[in-house]
Length: 190
Image (cartoon, rainbow, N blue to C red; front, side):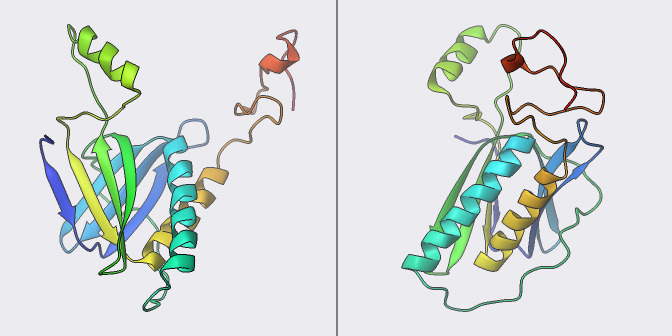
């Protein structure tokens, strides 16, 4: 059972963003409902996966459940201050509430392990589960327009990072790049 479940139904605002320079960026997911502001830490790969998944879900919904109404897309996608993350996201899930035509994004806290919890960690890794079953959960309901804006913004901020190597997919730093497919004989200057 989750330690704390935060229900944000519906959010007035949902966004993602980062702080820092490419290679040293910290990514966040942020939602607001009234005076409640929730900020969560994410990995760049999670932000990219969220963008792709949301767009796929919206495409599926548009084909099978045409939108009842269209609202203007949010324009200001900046993070709000203060950036005080509640937790680091371990797992995310997406769903759809057909009755209210809202998408729901569920974020569950990343499992953290204390010294002496090796057995629990091994079983967790065997299952491929990064979520803490006793960790916090945030459920954020948003309109299709809000989620579409989130997805496009998320994809844009991921692209603002370091370029990736076409051979290995690893990021290329300003000082060069070690590319394993080049058999490790020299640093590629791509």
